[in-house]
Every structure is written in structure tokens, then in C-alpha cells.
Length: 146
Figure (cartoon, rainbow, N blue to C red):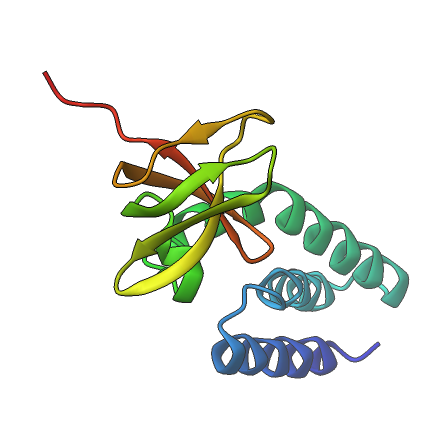
């Protein structure tokens, strides 16, 4: 295989990564770059392909989790996901067993329940949102600070 092809593949994959910013093709771009170097050193097509695959897989497996951890730190929570950890006011007694209960958070009313199967929370209690299940908020009573 002509070594110039590896350089072209490297450039194409790099452009795709820059456009998408999804950490999807950068690993294969690294593999193509190392395969290009192997071609420059005189290795044959089979060795270049093996080097490309091996380096791409190693980069993907070893560095992707680390990169995702550091590059996704600034991700903003959106819509309902941003309610988790927020406080809400119970408008209607919450009884998980009876599947009733409503809370108000940020001016919106939501159905709510607790994590416990027999959980109950009285009206006018301040609660904290722990999660979302379907269209219901999973809440718990807020602990009072001492």
C-alpha cells in the first residue's frame, strides 16, 4: 500500500473528528499516522494494516475512558436532567404505594414518588430530587441542617 494513502486517511479522519468533536475517529487517525510511519520505514502493506489496527484498538481501549472523563466535564445538564439535586415543594401528599403525589419545582408541577415502595411525604415538605423515572421525579425529604 502506498504510504501516502495512510497520510490521506489520517487527514480525513482528523477532519471528521474536528467537525464532529465526538471522540470517535481520533483513535483511528492515530493508527493511520503510525501506519504511515511504518510505511516510511519500509514495512510492507500487511505490517502497515496490522500496525494500523493494533494502534487504533490500543488507543481506543486505553485512552478513550480517560479522554471522555476530562473532555465531558463542562457538559451542561439540560431540561429535566438539570432538576436532579434541586429542591421542590410537595403540593400533594406523596404516597408511592398509592401512586399519588405532586411537587412544584421551578414553577412547574411534576408527579413524584419516593425510592421506597411504601414511602410517604406530607404536603408542604421540602424535598430533594434524586432522579427521574419516566415522567415522575424520585424525591426524598430534605434533611435539616444543624
